[in-house]
Image 1 (cartoon, rainbow, N blue to C red):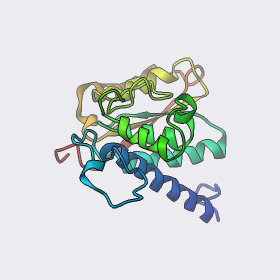
Image 2 (cartoon, rainbow, N blue to C red):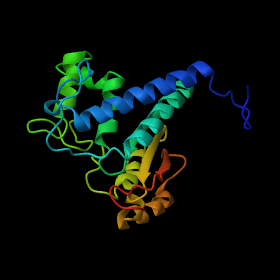
Image 3 (tube, rainbow, N blue to C red):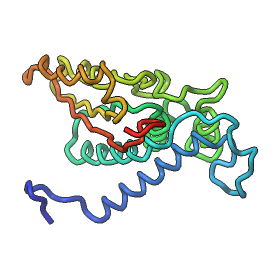
Image 4 (cartoon, helix red, strand yellow):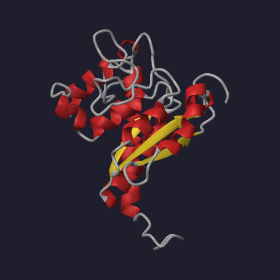
Length: 216
């Protein structure tokens, strides 16, 4: 089967794998937001399994996991040099969850192993005293953009590709973030790119309408 541009479309098996990755990443993300115990739900959920204070927003997470999964497919298919920059607010669970799912997180932090005990540590540490922050903090493997303050993702993406001609910076921009002054100005940064000596920025607008807590 061919697409309109003459490229091979994803096979049913690839689509099934993408869906499985997306669902697993969603589970890892929501577990970080809500759970401090019982990570695989082996027993009925009880109040003591849930964190007392919830930090992080679910709204941006499924979309970011969807983008991350498909970018991984493209990277693998075309052997690309690409980085992912998460702009929407409180998108940390998606970034950490995908890093754990692909094995990078456990490689850097062996105590957060790819088993039930490691999964419980991963869930509990998110936005928890003595754990990690609610954003893609510097502790997150590969993070160059924390995402705690909205508006700077696109400028960081452009900065990442300067003098790096083989790099593609895929930058997810939230709908609320797109309304900030720094982000609105960052669209003009394409004027500074030299197609010979610099890489490419691929903006991905996440127009889910949530805008964290207000309609966009």
